[in-house]
Amino acid sequence: MSSPGGLDGKVIVITGGTQGLGAATARLAAGRGAAGITIVGRNPER
Image (cartoon, rainbow, N blue to C red; front, side, top):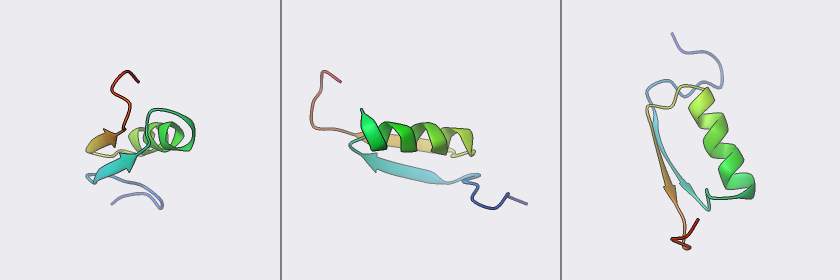
């Protein structure tokens, strides 16, 4: 059984994930058990 607020086994897509709120969301999702995280950004250097 997954925990409340958990992302066990979920695959998520985060836009703007290279900095700020998007980066924090990616770290949180990883810590809550997301099975896959796709981070989409417009700047390939980040």
